[in-house]
Structures are given as C-alpha cells and as structure tokens.
Length: 420
Length: 161
Image 1 (cartoon, chains in turn cyan, brown):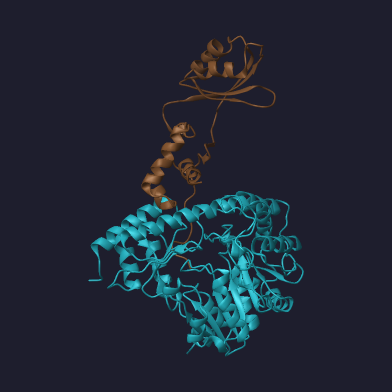
Image 2 (image 1 turned 90 degrees about the vertical axis):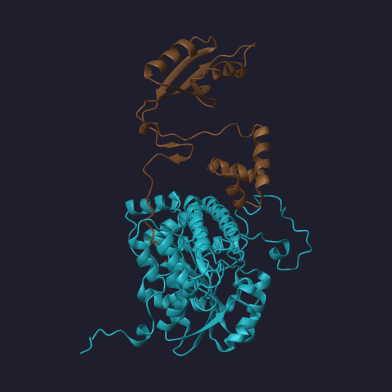
C-alpha cells in the first residue's frame, strides 16, 4: 500500500542534489580542507550584526510589509542605482525576499505556466532546474563553452533552440564557473531576448564580486571617445561609485522584460540571515508579491534590519572582502597554472573552474582527491551541461588553507596523472 | 600602486613569502622583492614583529600606558623631549597626541616594580615633564588588529551549492 503522503510527480521528477554525496564524505572526516563551499568565509560585518541585535533588543520582531520595510526598499533602490545604474521605485519595483533563492522560486512560479520552456544557461547554480520543474515548466539547458570563457552567446541560444522559451535564466558573475559578462557580451543576448520576446531572470547575486576593470567605453555605453573623466590610475575611483558589473536590465528594451535577483548573502556575507530581493516592472513584482504574501508574508524582520545597516555603513567592509577574494583568485589561478591544470581566467564570484587532467572524469577525480588527499571540490557535471570535465573550486577560504589544498592537489596530480 | 598592494599584504601577514605575494598580485617574484626593498629603503617599512598574546605565556610581561604632560620653552621642542624618551628600551611606543595630555607612551617590563621604577627614576625626573599618569594594562583583547580570543570555528557546511 502506498503512503497517502506520496510526493507529487513533479517532486518525484527531481532527484537529490549531486553535491550531497561529497558533502556526506567530507563531513565524516575532520582532516578535509573544503574548497566546495558556496558561501563566504567572512562573518557578516559587525555593524550589520549589531543592528540585528539592537533590533531584537527593541523588540522589533513583528511582520513587516509584504514587500519589505519601506526604509530597506528605499535603501536598496538607492544602492542599485548608485552601483549598477538600475532604477526601481521602492514602492512598486522592489520585493524583499527570504534570500535570493526565494526570489528565483517566486519568479518561476509567477511567470511559468505548466509545459512552458525555460532556457537555463549552464553550467549554473543547481536550483534553477528543480525550481522550473516544481513550477511545472520544462528546462531547456543552454550550453556555454570554455572557448567562450563560459559566457552566454546568441549562437548558443540559437543552437539550443531557445527562441521558443518563455523565460531565460542567466547568472553572471557565474556560479560555478566564475565567468562574467560585459555590456558588449550581453548585447547579443539582449537582442535575442527582444527578438523572440523572451523574459529574462538575471540572478546577479555575485554582482559585487566582479574583478574586472570597467573601461571608459563600458561606463558610457560604448559611446566613449576614450577621454573618460575617471582617472584609471586612481585606486579610489570606484569608491562608492559605479561597480564593474553590468546588469542586463540596463540594456535598451530590457528593463520591461527582466527580473533582476540579488541579495546580501555573498557580498555582505549574510547567507544564514536569508535576505534577498527582486527588482522588476511593477506588474511583475506585484505578481511575485502575490505568491510571497501567501507563502512567506514577509522576509525575516531581523535580517531586514541587518540588511539596512549593511547598505548604510558596510560598503568599506565589502570592498575589503572583495579585495581579499581578488587576491585569492589570482593566487589560485597562478597555482593551477603551475600545477598544469588548464583553467580559464574567472573574473567573478569566488570560484575557478579548472579542467581535470586527461583520463579522468570530474566525478572520479573529485572523489579520489577527497579520499586520498582530503580536499573537497565539486565536480562540474553537477551544474549541468558544459560542466563535465571541470571542477568547481571555491576560494571562499583563508589563504593558509588554500595554499595547503593546492599543495595537496599538486601532489595528487603528480602521483595520479590518470584514473588507473 | 603595486608597492601599495605589497604593503597591504605585508600588513595583513608579514610572513607571506615573495612567491605567494607574486601569485596574489600582478607582480612577478622579482617585482615583489624590489617593491619590498624599495619600501624598506624609503623607511616606510620599519620592521616586522610577531603579535603576541602575553596572557598565554608563563612569563609575565607588564605593560603600561603612560600619559605625559610637558612644558616647552624656547630651547626645547616636543621633538627634543620625544627623542630623549624614545631612546629608553623600556619605551615601546611614543606618540604626541591631542587632548588632555601631550604624550602617549607605552612601556614594557618584566614586573610592575621594574616599570614603576623606570617611570619614577627615568621619566618623571625629566625637567620638562610636569605630570605622569600610569595605567597598567590588565587584559588585552585586541592587538594590531588581531583579536586575542579563541577564534571562531568554521561552522559552514563543508560542501554547499
């Protein structure tokens, strides 16, 4: 007799996460250095934690407005305008959510009808596929290639048959590859979306973690004559100014078809506080809010106070963390070059995506590395098409551990050149 | 610019070797060595020291913060007085500060007796010094930007998406 609590078929359709196995092995041992972690190693800036504590002391523990505290929405509006030139009205263009994850899930449920196609640029964060499935949609993977530095191209969209998709999901800076897309890279993708009338879900949770220099022509939308007023030698020119990241929603004709998702988990090191937000056209935010108000009511109040303070006073600490990540990124890329594992130059998030040596699958390499050297990494296959033969290596770990882990990987590769 | 970056890294951890600093910056090893040499030659980098939590050693180390008030005359400047005081090996830091007193002096010794004697016999008698207020350090919680607690364990999940 089957249980009356038999899961619905769309739940059955989704298997357990591919990282689960590695997690279980890694948790069993205490000598493991994990480069498999998808969250910052820094603590939330103290000012933000202190604001959360203070809000608890004052008893600020009731629900907030469904869309989030007005003060927080106003602060988000100002922040995304200043950093990313995104303009959204705090009253109807912003929804504060329990992590960017909730915003992603809301978008699938709000905009995907059963049977509709959702194109997902892969390799990608593991939640998009299952989220689409839970919403009743069909996932269409769009393979990005190392030859393109894992950027999404119009050719890749064409080849995958994405012209029939209702929604396109892209995440840049990318988890797991660390790829970024410049304005010039985004233009053909935006043109494709406009031409085929496709909505876009842009997961920009890693936006602050972009390590490229923004060029003069990037700053003024390609119209520049090379005499930008900013002095490229001035190290402080980015101070509270525009970030290097370009949001696809800032491209012509894109704001009306794009939901931008972001949050405080990565740049502000607030993963456990679960606070994110969605930006979009008023009607679209209203649709997402209809689900949110019944499902969540409002995002955690304590976390909203922390986020407000994070935007108010923690920009300096964010810059310090970003500088640290960038150093580690250079360090890890240098070490993979020295070890002889090809690795494209990731310029965002806190991941690099090296190739495993010939004769190995990513899965076998990751498992043997974990067993024999106690270093945890995540095989790229887990993140969808295009990830095979690669490893996701996170550098959200202190330099001492990174140094030791890379020494172990170097030894492992020397001793086990192939899987024999 | 690159010297600035090297300096920042050494301030974070003076024991980073040149190879690691090169990997973390746009410089090669020779470039890093040259930057460090130039910073040292220019007197920007004055030394490298360990940050010590004395409470974890059996040997007691007594430290005191001393406020000093001075009077100046035509022949004597703050610099003259500072030079005189800084020569004593017991003085580990000496700064001219704004506010209620003139100098902020840090003194170290093996016992309270030794530090007290130093203040009363070597510092107080200096003619320009009109007043000393000595504060013995009881517990130190943070030194050179490093918290002297037990640190936090990394409680993150070992593998996460």
